[in-house]
Amino acid sequence: APEIRALVAAFYRQQERLSGLLMSRLALVGGLQHDVRTFATKVRLRLEIEAPSASLSQAISDLDDMVRLLDDALLATQGTETATDDALELIDIRELLMLEKDARPDQRVTLEVVGGDLAPPLYVLGNRLALRRVFSNLIDNAIAYGHEARIAIASGLGRVVVTIDDRGPGSPAEMRDMVREPFVRLERSRARATGGSGLGLAIVSNLVARHDGNFTVSDAPDGGARMIIDLPQFRADRSG
Image (cartoon, rainbow, N blue to C red; front, side, top):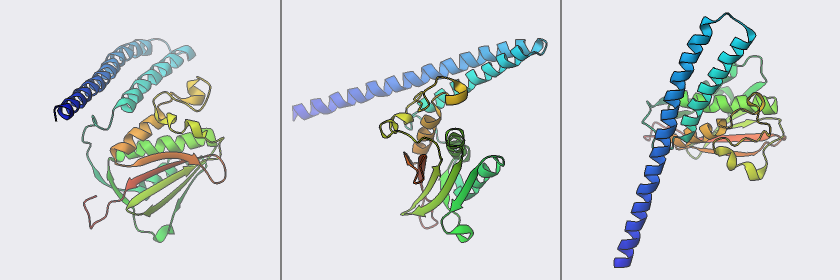
């Protein structure tokens, strides 16, 4: 019917406009990142020529924070539709999380695997650096705001499930969907030292979605927050 054809055409035009707006946003952030990074590098080189001082070290630290913020903003705003095909490999999630635990010998980080040491490896097909960033962000958040990170790994129904619990104040139920958005923070102060940039969980949500996974926030059984990542388990009897 003509009405149905007109409706389909209208939806198609709307989809094209939304896609164009998304690409424009990514191009804007990417352009800003490149230009600001260039200026920051020039300023840093000039500062490093000066005599060492406390204020000079602080200025260089501020420049590093600015560049890191731009990198995180670009990563957080990249949608799954615009993501490039990263190199994929078989990753043992237990091994990956053990590396993160061992990298924090002075922190309260524990790792439990359902089935113990005799449990078979739990493989996912993904990008190693991206998944390390996911778990690194979540573990660092748990330590910073909840004083410890209790990690548990399990599998079932073709999924690998990782939970990270802390002993912090938890997350309000009404904020759990909002924390996936860039620059949304549960910590109320605006200080970078205490609350970060508000991009960490947005990056986690984005990278997990690229791996066909799910990221949810809930309450830990003993209080605090629980971060849950579930990813498709790779099995030899199927492609992924």
